[in-house]
Each structure stands twice: as structure tokens, then as C-alpha cells.
Image (cartoon, rainbow, N blue to C red; front, side, top):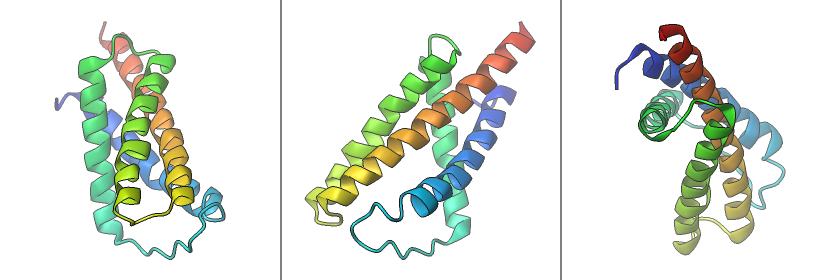
Length: 133
């Protein structure tokens, strides 16, 4: 769980979640949402959330992935993106925290961010698995 590979995957994954999330939600996605997204996050908590998410993703990936190919990482990321992006966000829709358009846009953006995260984690895992072999 606290292997060198997992910790490096966590660090690189958290960097992607932080900067990729900013790019996807603020630069690309801001015009796609039907309601104004005036969010000013507390960056310390955002960084902690990115680290926790990347660590959990990397740890689960290392336990469940059959191989360290980029296609395996992308597929793993796709399923996590579906779970979080559509499953969890649909709860927000059910409790009227979001509208349908924003739920779908958020779901698609989550798919992209987690597919890329899966690729990042698989590349790091593959690199260190082949280096230690």
C-alpha cells in the first residue's frame, strides 16, 4: 500500500487531479454548465481531496488491475468515472443540488479526468514494475 510505486502514482495522480480538474471544469467546462459555477475552493482542502482520491485510486488499481497497460488503466478509470461522475452526481440531481444538464456535463468531465488518471497510474505502475523485474 505504501510502496514506492503507489506513492509516486499517488503524487502524479494528485497533480493531474488538481491541474487537470482545473483545466476541465474551469477552462473547458465552465461554459457548458447551465448555472454559474462561481466556486472559490479552499485550496488546502482541494489538495487534500486530490491526494486522498489519487491514493485510493492507485491502491485499488494496484490490487485489481491484471496488467499495467494504458488500455487497462483507461478502462479502470472509465469505470471509476462512471461510478463517481454519473453514480454519485446523480445523487446530487436526486437531491436537487444540480440540474440534469449540469449532472451530465459533470459526469462526462469526471469520465475524462478518471480515464486520464487511470492512464497516468498504469504508466507509473508499468514503469516501476518493469524496473523492479
